[in-house]
Image (tube, rainbow, N blue to C red; front, side, top):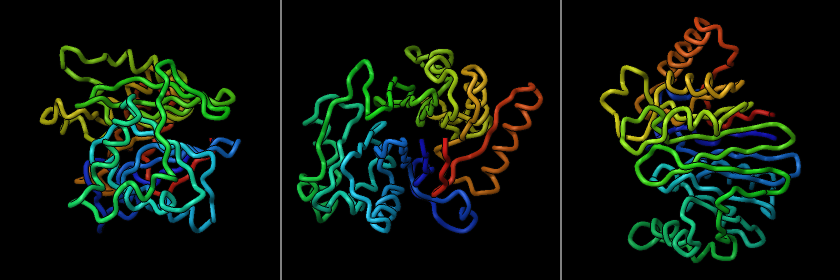
Length: 281
């Protein structure tokens, strides 16, 4: 599988000086199994760059899927600017946490209604088809996909992708150590992420920042390390970077995780996701 990050920020886009390395686009990740199937996770502003890349390479979307973790603004705001969705002959199968296909379509279309946007979702209607994610998981080509709900305001999904023994787990927007009464414990998430080759996980804050942000639905870099440790994951990828954090700050977050892992003698590789980076798994 080939993994490409097109947008790695949370909350709002944050381009500008000091953010050239990790980038400023909001959430969008692409997974391409060897079979040629295209799986896109979320449609933050990074999906615009994915679309431009598809145009450049004259890619036709005939076996493409668009999975939504949830519908907060930073995970949907790029869809109106995703040019391949306007081109006849392309087809994107849309799935998300909302099980009712008509409701899913309504949620996606709301941001493109007057007066918010000059073009409605109807202009994409021949290119988008809305499907239901099955409760016991689903198969896309030869890739097995399972999902669970995270600790986040409003329903949000984490996805686990398995193909030929290789595992990628994507868990953005999750408060791993939530104190809420009905919150799922860290051990629950660790079981879902077990033996991941690549664990992409929300690490928006540091441990020092987190106390003032409880209930926001996000985690710290050290929470992410603990999840990687409990799940026996091989590569930990910090994700959903805070818009206030520049490249230097994110580098420091990575160094702190590596230092803590070394102190505990953990065999875990750690780095932070950055826009336009591709990884072959």
